[in-house]
Image (cartoon, rainbow, N blue to C red):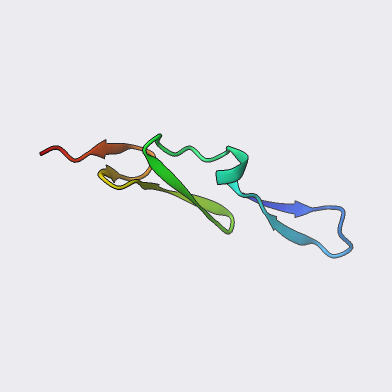
Length: 59
């Protein structure tokens, strides 16, 4: 998310880190990667999916 600060003389864009602030909605088996204005969820190691839904690899 991007927040425009009203307190600066010149408008500035402040990036909110959803991963650190708890706003990210990632699966418990996924990591969070903050981007400017957004975030990505990435399934960890032996899991696959879109990061919001991760499944294990079955042998």
